[in-house]
Image 1: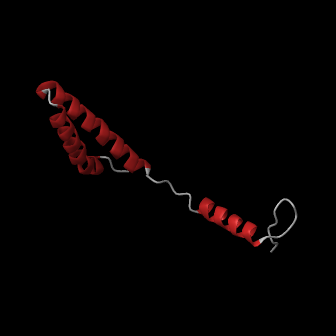
Image 2: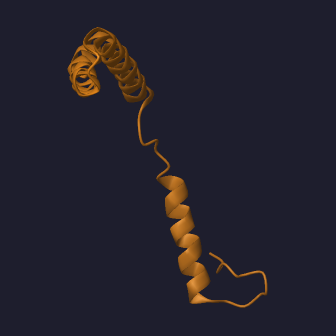
Image 3: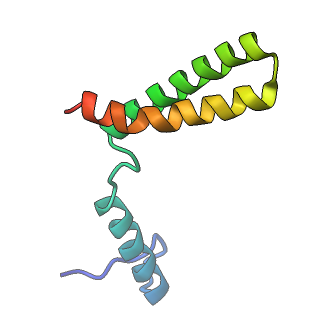
Length: 86
């Protein structure tokens, strides 16, 4: 096994630590969200925006619209998780 060297040809322990750290980052490159979770959250946000918009049109109360949108988005997540199965 050869010792990694920087471009100037000298060996340095700090260079070896940096190369090991960069290799660990490359090996653990899993996505933060799966496509299933991203689709569910995006759909829940759209549903929440629709509920908030309709509530605002009917009640003319922005606080009630925001609360209804948050409740609509939160309530739709478990339902979407069971409906959208990969």
